[in-house]
Length: 491
Image (cartoon, rainbow, N blue to C red; front, side, top):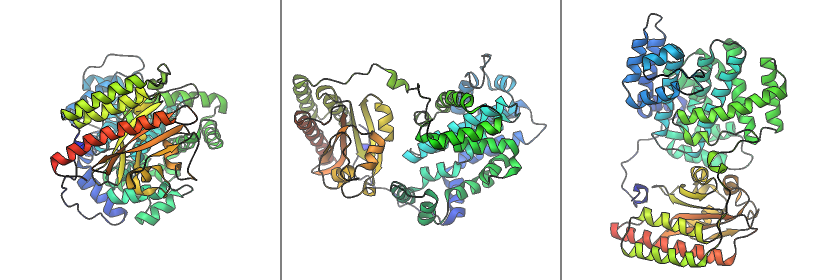
């Protein structure tokens, strides 16, 4: 049974949140990411010592078995090792790839491990996607113009939003408040940060860069300073590109960002654009190799690129009333036998997906504090990607918001294709698209603890499918209520 499904697990009192950017720097460095700081110190002590040997760097990496495995995987990838020289030891990796390349690999791996080990927020994964995308683009551009510091440029681009990443990971209630502010259409990000936090997240990044001595190139990129020279400008421009292409590779913002890079590297815009799209594909592979698979799926690809899961045969299930009855009977038997709740919810999701003629189906559950609804599993085209994006702060939406209706009022919501409830479905639409959809609560003793979400290519979800969805949700609610009654707790 999934631990997420426990109800009102008592929690230890949390310490007060720090005040100001300096307080957050100290908390993150000393309490939240001390292991990352130790790795940074170990690697930097070696790289800053001109007399240091490859053996010393190997010792730093070999202390961590998981890091060792990831470094070797990266060392054998086409990105780092295009000549495919076999690498089976850290010492060999240093010989083949170079001292600094392996050192920066270790820093990138340590960063991903420190952040993803503490739970994943939607905005953290967005930031990580942008970081890896910018890092790969900056490195490739550096190589293309003969810049010798390509590996330093890669890690500088990856670390240049470390404060944003860390805050979304460890920001607790303040992160939720800022998330709500930023979900409001038209909100200026810097102004919202200043209003909610009293500082801007780039100040947190600057403080962590100084605290961990992450290097002058990161600092110059943060300050948009000329001291970083062409390398610093590559980092800055690559981040601008990666922000711009969120609106599409052919958006006005993207074209302007490509033109700026083309001027920097001395190449025609149209020629550079094709290379940048190819590097976006490479960035997704690199992020996955570093252990950030969730972020990899959010990197905007070229026009013809698709996620691996979307390359599968595109088939929407046909409605099958007999299959629906069989699975509902199977669900009843599982509930009567007190089967694990996780199994019940997965079968219910599979049943409604396979038997109701739907495009996608997902179930999501409330976090322990009941403030966030988090996607747990999904089926259908792009299901895994959908589950990772399906994260909502319940109270952030307007009164007509489907998430609030389902969780706060236990009301199902059915929308036709493109319907938005006067703007109330905007944040849901940004994640799921414009398809016809339903959101139906899953309840424990009448109190919502999660939802089923489904959508269809049809203009609307017909009444038969809607009633079938309600039946599956009713069965799932019976199972959740049973678990809650057995534990004596309903959250």
